[in-house]
Amino acid sequence: MTVKKVKKAVIPAAGLGTRFLPATKAMPKEMLPIVDKPTIQYIIEEAVASGIEDILIVTGKGKRAIEDHFDSVPELEQTLIEKGKSEFLALVEETTNINIHFIRQSKPMGLGHAVLQAKAFVGDEPFVVMLGDDIVQAEVPCTRQLIEEYYKTERSIIGVQPVSREVTHRYGIVDLKESIAGGLHKVESFVEKPAPGTEPSNLAIMGRYLFTPQIFKFLETQKAGTGGEIQLTDAITRLNEMQNVFVYEFDGKRYDVGEKLGFIQTTLEFALNREDLREDVLKMMTQLIEEQTTVKITI
Ligand code: G1P
Image 1: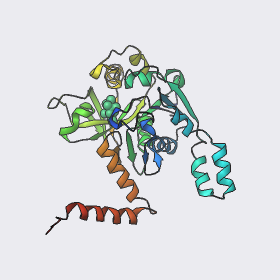
Image 2: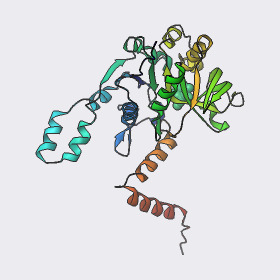
Image 3: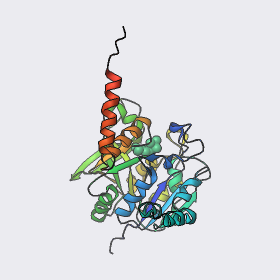
């Protein structure tokens, strides 16, 4: 039997965004911009660059702005045409040529429950799950790397990277069994947000997953875990008992935009990587640092 092509992606975007209140009271956290692009657009671009053809975004209450963002805006487009602003027109239009579907998660019952909403969309195919809090910059897109590993193993692959021991309690952490080759490992189990000092390793799940459709069998019967939520990590551990799940240490720099400091760092780094902004941002940062560190002597 030939291996099935990975064509579908699921992006859970139903979270309440409490870490960014009050900004996220009326606006979805996925629409917060890094420089001038909503965070969710970076994720969609990674999916498209990885060869994904259909994307399902799992939304919830108060998330209409995401749907609007990926829709066309005829009045705006007409005005930009009339004013000859073709570079802006291209920016507005580039979000409408992608095959995006939406479904609502009626209650915020956790990441596992959000992914379960994708069951009918996925059918009997392998698929990827991409979390919007993690943006990865890599030569080969992170999701593409997982897809390549899937074609070799035909098993679920979870993207991981090492983190410092002080922050393992913020992640799903891997209990390793056996290293296979080139960053690919077999797994004993996964632990969601282990208490400090109890973590089985420092390898953390980084918001990129590739699943065989068998994951739904376990999501359907998954009981609430850490934080009283239906955890995707717990369902992966149970899937691993039936069918090997691998973890893959992907190449690339991962940015945590789901947390304030990570968000600020990402904004600064992305601005510094832009030719049109780099020089001015550097000047501004140098000036700010001088202002903040100069001891003012008043006589
Ligand atoms: C989620 C997952 C966790 C993973 C993390 C990656 O947690 O539950 O396993 O390590 O994303 O960013 P969250 O950050 O949504 O609490």
